[in-house]
Image 1 (tube, rainbow, N blue to C red):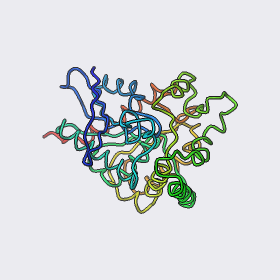
Image 2: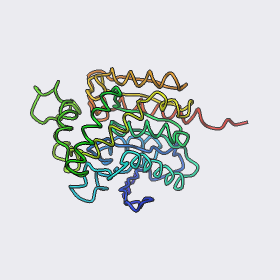
Image 3: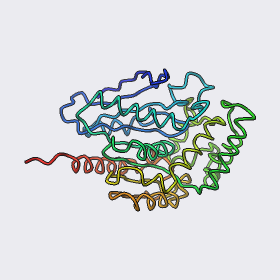
Image 4: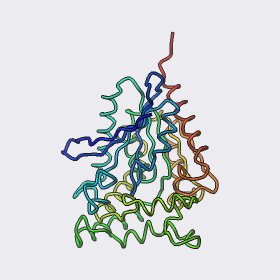
Length: 317
């Protein structure tokens, strides 16, 4: 197995840091996984998951989004997308990565995995560009009412005008991310107990200089704008109706309101798509790929992708 990293120049000149995990021999490769990481983290955190898929005949390609990981040019850039239209920009970046994958591997199907904010990006990708992929796993997603999101967007927009686009928005962070740990605060003092029950995962996240950053005023505004778009019923139904979609989440994940928000999104998709499935993992928190039951999650994802690709294969005479 080999891991390759490089900087890919995008349409506007931005250099997106890229990762490719692939097997030494390519003749048995079934498909390409385009992996979409979440907020305040980076693609290298998915190294174990990527290696598992490579062992099972997939190539994994991912990017560090704008304002994340090695794409961010400096500490000040962490948590900042763009001055304007940041959400549309990072979703369009995913499509540009898809086009790159098609150029690299024109004869292999592409499947997608998005976690947390990456799942929000993936949901908009499905609406706009879904015909380019053969299956989608939506992991650790959320649902909020339009009113809640509109108020949140207005607060962040006001802060952007008052403080500037790149200023870290500690107030909005305290009202959103910091509250995810409310149920788990009694367990310790890291503030990230909500991500996983595994103490080693919590410690690694806290000590990672490229994880845990507070979003800028504009990035919060952008994300709330994106959430309003993807939670709209009229937008949800615009994706390809036969795309296989698998919703997965931890039963103890506060981002998905402990399963309730994820079920809400699943039911909205179920009304408009013909192949939608759903699974909650008991006693698992936000990062189910970093929980003790991760091997079971890996296996469920692999089975789903294999079945989707097999179903989409041209029938032989």
